[in-house]
Length: 199
Length: 199
Image 1 (tube, rainbow over the protein chains, first blue to last red):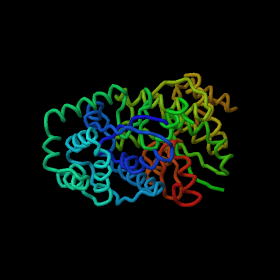
Image 2 (image 1 turned 90 degrees about the vertical axis):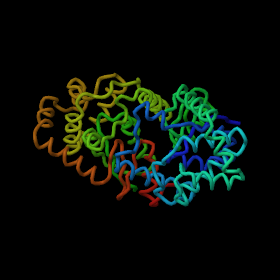
Image 3 (image 1 turned 180 degrees about the horizontal axis):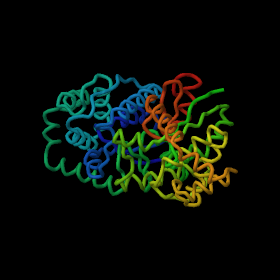
Image 4 (image 1 turned 30 degrees about the vertical axis):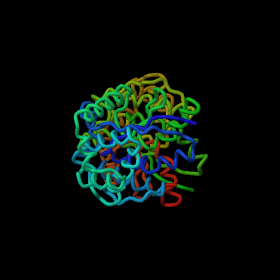
């Protein structure tokens, strides 16, 4: 079975495509993918990588591109979704906490559906609360734990790990030491995991 | 036969992949693609789109990504090629002049081979001269004509047309009013030309 890491940030628009299709894709391709939340905003700030802010033409293209590709993958979406999100850090700390307890993937998928189908901004307390409810978690308890210093530090460490691997954007797939950036590189990552080159 | 436009700029790194594989791809897919040089640098400057300058991690990734995809398409390359190129405008004015006389595509392919295989910076007079020689054109005459005010204006107008269509980067494919950005969207453009959606 092919195995690799999926680095994503809640707040990343193109990650929606991967998050929505990855389970089915893994089943079809006999692949096992490890979901790894990190804080892409801090990485982009440090690296002066500003993909869409102040770029209306590129932003409009991004939404149209996501719309076309969502249709390709039979993923429902109401676009554009609210963007950028207000608070990326807490959402990803919740996701990271959830990963250690087995509900992180379900939380992430639910939160993205709220964001991209219902238009609830994913960094908002309302979105986090609702997504946690739907994931059978107690929002009050989880949010308190996610806000604690140890979870803050844990996300910082995950982000540092991502940067050391060469990750600079989300979504990214890392296979051995190869970085593949973008939902559209998912099949390339699989190919690399299987045969060591892109087919 | 599927038909669409290929907007590119000499100076664009990812355009190398398209320029190198497009003839064979068209033959395999029964497609006819219209090569349209424009000045992506002026568009990016106006739109504050800075893809690689001052971004060493993203730049390193770009070269690695091109290397992997060139291997996928069996395209030879010695990477990284000199980048950014010094003068993008004259090279694209030469290409545009060549398009009106039937040698523009061959010139572009030859210039990219010089740039990506032999490491000759594509905006340099040396590269333009050698590429014109290999395309059976007189470099002195062509460069004089390409530098004239009417060719300067012609490239400006092509660039304005590209912008009106929603093109913001190179390479881009435009099918009816749909813009597809990136060599990795070539098959999507074909799909759109054939059936009106991305398959």
